[in-house]
Length: 81
Image (cartoon, rainbow, N blue to C red; front, top):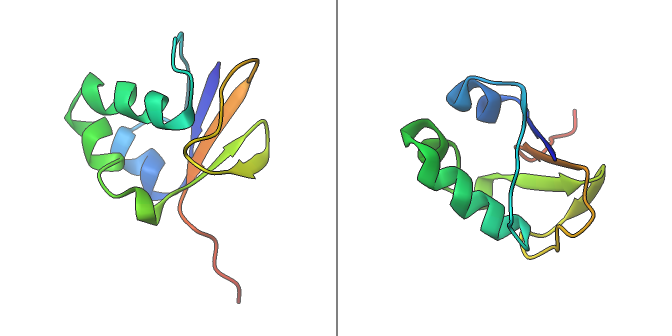
């Protein structure tokens, strides 16, 4: 699946996107796999309250299932203005 990172998430990880092979059942499982990779991922995912996630371009919660998903995107909350 494609995993996309936006704004400061991208800056902390150092990549705008990557292709990941995963057995994760939920977004949270994927986050745990990413956190375990290395320090930069652990830092990027240290405070999930400051992150939003979209699965196949639909905003979801971290307990969303990943079966059949092609794309997961992580980004900070958007502000209006």
